[in-house]
Image (tube, rainbow, N blue to C red; front, side, top):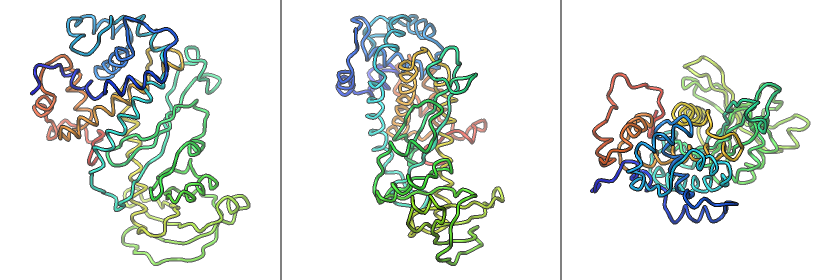
Length: 389
């Protein structure tokens, strides 16, 4: 039974107290606030994400109007704009990075039972990045060009459930391909990337880890065909070849066979050329695997539309990273609720229902079940969904 617990308290239970305390102990704060703990800060930031708050004053005013419920929400300290601003500026952002890793582990365990829809039983990951523009005068530490600042969100998601398993926040000038140096590749797993990640020295590292990559070939790639395989052109496939690179640098960086597959996309009429180091899966599966990479584009679209990661509550690098990691944690918490409660609604709908019922004392399962809008004619078909799009 719910026993009259607030909706927010039921969501906050996903942040395990002891595990979070261990995260805090790894990165002690220079001068702690006795009246505003790390958990208070965390819960306030999660509250801001769940209820679409726009500023620290907005958070203070909203929670201040419900001060009699703060204890029930798990917030023990006094919420003020200055205390929250100080905590965001001075408490190490890695506390919330560690918290997100715990939630990632929990979410992946919940979605591990999802059925494969591509035709590959191994793990499939998609990599991409998204740029967040900032004002140069307010965020000079993130200078990108002469007239603007920006940061880049490098992300790798598990395609079963669109769960982010790796996120790196860097200056926008950092090229996408350099992130491959920071990823530990799993043997047998597939990594799906666009052409920005085509660097054959780094792709050779993926192959050396007994992992596989699927990406688009660049138009200037130089190669010769060792062997051609028969294809069924009625499926859209045009060729399936075993090739070797002949470029002066590329053949030294990747001195192995590659598989080149050309595919005519029936939706756009474009001829797409894929390269992979896997020679076992069907050519059509390679094309479907690359198409599944679109899920990461939907992930970026969803978090930018539904979470507060474009307008920031603080100006320092630490405050920005703190807000991003609490936003990612909020996404993961909603994902865990979606799967554990068996609601299977769009993530946006769940967030909308929670935002207007955050102070109610109804059971989360009952609340979301009563607001089932999957058959609603006004639902947007492009909203990010789990177990299918």
